[in-house]
Image (tube, rainbow, N blue to C red; front, side, top):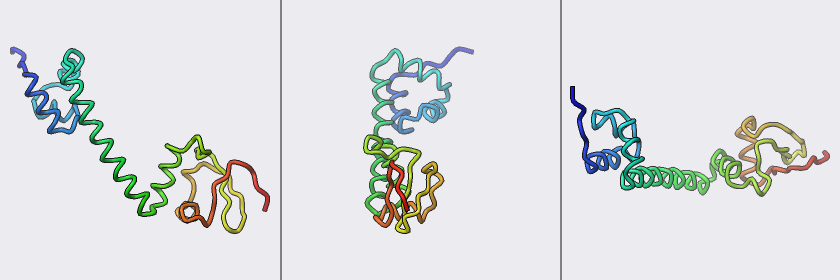
Length: 133
């Protein structure tokens, strides 16, 4: 059975409709994802279309994350700090001192919602040095 040839425009349209998700674009075209990956290696327009659509998705997700941060969602604040503020000392392993001055050392993902909320609202703090009670 002869292989079906897809025009650049067909591939570009499928990439746009699938928001840059190659497997979904391939499914819509009825081809293997490798077909699109192979064409993207040879064709700058196809490669750029994938990058642009993926960039749009990332921007959308980042905008939603920032909305959650602005709304005071502790999980969003914690995630943003752990991923974007490492140079300021927000790393996976931290010491958390609550208003009762109890030092707890553990991985950030083990923090309770109450501890994250205390950090987010200023009732608790994250420190990289050991403090005494």
